[in-house]
Length: 341
Image (cartoon, rainbow, N blue to C red; front, side, top):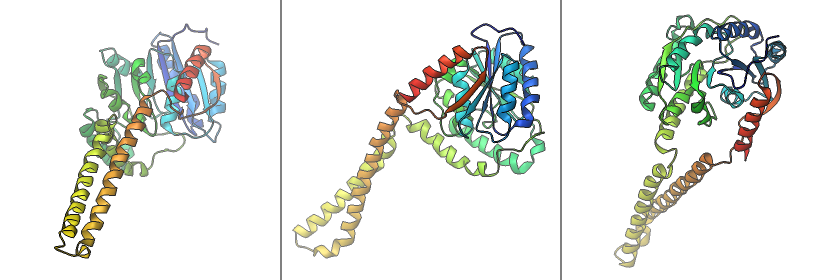
């Protein structure tokens, strides 16, 4: 067994895994070799996202034999974003790296990301430039989506879907992740002033297990684009989005009712002649009030989001290993307490 390394460590590598039993040992071996070559303290944090195979059993064995390895088991399958968040919350490194557990990213590329990070950037994204083995049915929609995302977000990178990234600790600590936002960490951080770079990395074909990403993911991209556009413009002031059409709708409804009232009071025309206009005016009034109410409700939700009360997006069942377990556990408990109130 290796000698315990000092606290805090320099690098934390977070790897989410789901039914990746065949990749556990080869990936851990490559990561240990790559990180040991850096000759600085590090930790490897593997987070099992409710696997139904023996992924966590193998991770637990590795953690018992290597003090650099920490294995976290979540209570159920929460999804990749909460799984990454669980690893980020426990990480104690000054620099945090993330990568998928399918061995498609090569740990030997880690020095490339770190070298670019040391040039003064806050995030370095791994760009899977050569993905010919996937076929055009997967790569073409991905390229189109990436171009749209770059245009909408203002973050000029080529591969938003890559999990393989290096972050400065302060960038991760300033983000609150939910849904499927792990793909858009550069966008969210870029809006807060983070400096972002990109380097080409190797994209290997999968050797063990099966992919967890299908064509259905491509159909969610338009909704992601709409959500990003909304978050960019109105995440802190949603009333600006709903308030303007709401006020216009109320004014239009009020004018319609005023016209009907004047016509009826002047006895120039019977009230029945304007029944349709009266109905339309009523609909406009109700719709306008609802839109304004939605905007005010959005303001309350925004206040809640930026406030202290946040429900955790994951639940940990078991943790095995980690030379810095006490320090990391204390950090994780403190973050969970802040998130859950």
